[in-house]
Image 1: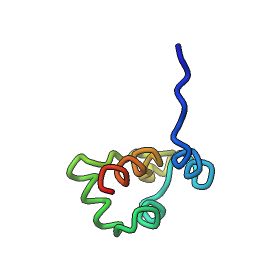
Image 2: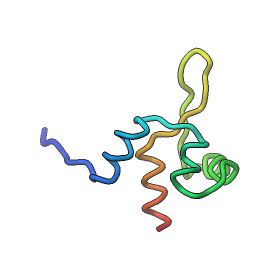
Image 3: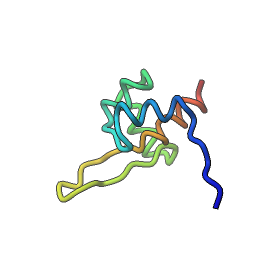
Length: 72
């Protein structure tokens, strides 16, 4: 299976923040409010994931980056 190369900007974000980020971190990256990002999740445009035993919500950095690319 051929290996795909990752966008360098996305790779830099993952190096800095990790593969999963919080809503406040995503808000910092996008310039949108946490409330707006949660609305995007509720409307099905930004998936979120429950992580760990505390079941905290996290977003994939790649999904947030895709949202930035789609809007910008």
